[in-house]
Image (cartoon, rainbow, N blue to C red; front, side, top):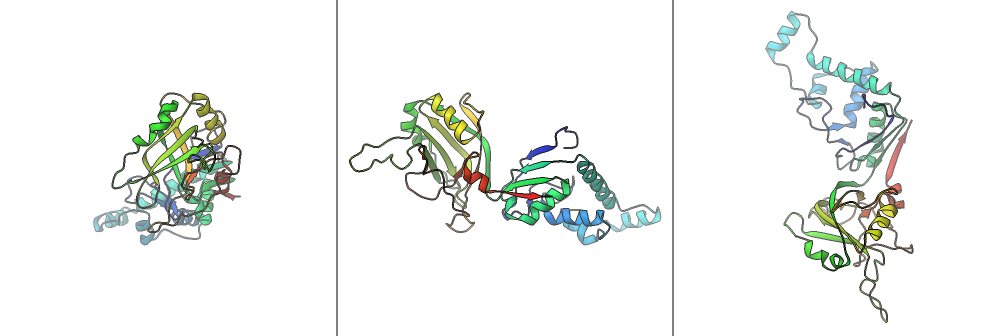
Amino acid sequence: MLKSTFTSFILIIHGEPDGSGLFLPLFRNSSKKETFYYDLQKLMDVDANVSAMSEADFGVMGFAPLDRHTRASLKQHNRKDPREERVEKMLDLMHQVRNKKIDTIEFRSCNLGKNVLSLQRFREFFGARLAGAPDLHTVFGRTDTRVREEFLKIHKKNHPITNDSPYWETYNFPWAHNSQGVVGEPPTLPRLVCCFNLNREEMKPESKGHIVADTADTFDAWIKQHVMPTGSTSGNEMAMHCLWVANIKGTNRPVAIIAGDTNSALSWGKDDMGTLRFVPPLSDDYKRHIVYSRR
């Protein structure tokens, strides 16, 4: 961020399930692999001279205690605790970033928006005017794509099941709720399907999935309507991002209920009428589940 000439950023970092922090070390070579909002609060308190780093604070931040020999040497030579020097360096970096006058940081980190206090502390640490983050699980990755009507008919043959990821969900575009047909009418098959392989514990997407469309025009139109206004198909895979409604851990209950787009002329959803979990970037539900902290 310091080297960039931009003042707005998108940061893609794994988030804690309760929104309390990010899976990113605050200090290099420390034993702690995450950064929590209370770590940032402590640093800002030290910077404001309303608190000081204690031995317990160093431990919380992943610094090992100094051995007896090191403590004696520092005292003998009247030198500062090297852990304090690292904290001071971090605070200097914080001020350098703040001096950039960052306008907006969009965190695409799972669940960070669940904890408003946490999101606020991350915004304050960077000195940004605005910071946003989802209160749902986020999905990023590259997924296989295919274009041809024949592939639509056989795509479920490519739904492998494992013990850890035993479930698949298929989202149909459009005519989600008529692929089985209604009385007196023939079924209307979808023109595009978006499929996700889900894990057992929380019904979240894992490494497998695909998108299949009848034609390239259908695919391009779908991307522009649901994913990226300027996007289009290219090759047999695409970068994919969305939000996802996972289950509350240890239960069969979803963390949220979304409306989807089932009332529009280009309705979509699932044949089984079950919980909608897929939240495309251009949907109204996506906007509803991005939480903001403002200066």
